[in-house]
Image (cartoon, rainbow, N blue to C red; front, side):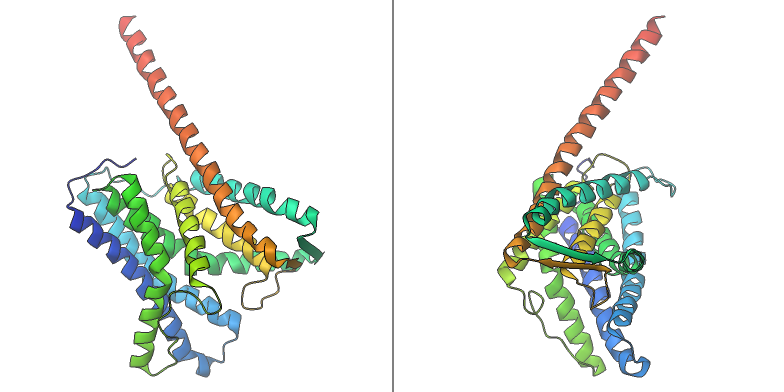
Length: 311
């Protein structure tokens, strides 16, 4: 856990808002710029999403990485060279996401709440590859670096975890509104279609949307809080797994064939929240377990040092 630093409360909040603003700016501008180029390029729905993902990644990821590096320098933490430490948290979170998804949805399939028809393995693999690239660049990496990365680290320099979690979760819930505000303003300036400022996507009840985002955001914080190096990769991986599972079941990627024929009963959609909550619980248990093991190893090393000094 990051120790509380000397940053002022206003400075910590300002930095968190700055990271959120970069996220909203990048994603909002990606939508507008794609609309601007769309008519001449004659892009299909999937191509539009892919272009948006590339633009959003280019606008958001580099500045957030620079901000996180500067934040680490200002907090006097030792500067680490780029390593592959992200692999372990990514693997842990992927495992948690897949196992809890199976525990959530397999009983629903057995009970007939979810019906799975034919499966095209080849198309499924194509979908997984395309969806992974788009989801990482457009959602998982920008959102996690900006919110559970930079904003979380900024808040933790001054505030306790519960306050940091509350602020970051509120920012997460407000992200769609911020993106739509950027898109609307930039679209009006550039003379393309403006989507309008909205609290939630069209056709989705705001209360249900905010409830799901709140639970999802807290679970992502639980993943990011695992006591392992590069823990933000855990949030990225779980974000990706959750999106992928939902898109496979609900067929959501601009009509792109998932390779799986699946239909979910309306009442069974509540299981999306069950998957989130179950995953959050598992991450909390893992966090406690890893901390206990780390403390035990630390005590063992100190004991060995004391024994060695006596010999």
